[in-house]
Image: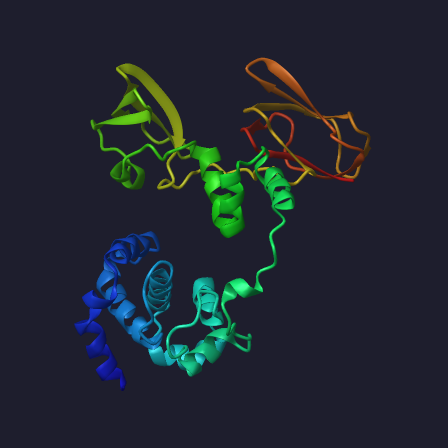
Length: 331
């Protein structure tokens, strides 16, 4: 089939090959990567990629892989010929590579050989059922591993989710840590937020419903934050949030990695009163490192173990926020 024929085929059968759920998901993905105004191109590319892939069965997650490739090609202005000719120098989405490696199984008749060779770049494809290659799971060890990752004892459901989708589950836990459980929000509010003056009901548990009203939004501050004013069951509330759409004139400080035991972060917002040590100093466990003050309450940061001061990220008189990286020690 030549290029013109394939494009004609793609356009004619577009709405017969893209599952309805994938249509709405892909549209949101396109907007998220800045291709909202090229949605028609994305749809056409989805159809073309489907043909390139051999018209595979499109269910979750294979339909998403076709969408990922379509977005990738539109974003990088690639044609089918570009993929085949320049493919060995192109870094394709991981989902596309995994598909052609056989991690989702084997399509009837196999994958298009030329395209598979270009995408895999010499990697050996799986020709058996992927599950046959999995090692038995040590559930006790996995539960202990996850407990270290999330800082608490995980439930059996947590462990199962982590075993199946480790990266996705950890990202989910980070979102929960940042925003708490948002599963009780209705879909439009979750995706798009509330409109000024809008009032919604949130059932946090059976028989307990919160009525939330978005009252007003404060002016942006130099650090890119705003005060959001709302009512919660008729009572006035306000919260300070970071508006990601605003370019802040304030330099954002590096945050401490909670999994890195060598990094010490601020536990409260406040001010650095005095940095007691210098880079290269040898310290013992319990030695004083930094004195901070928050709301007239001083806190002395102490060395959690003996070691050497590797880096100091703050200075006397500097304002700090919760989680800001203060100092780094190596054992």
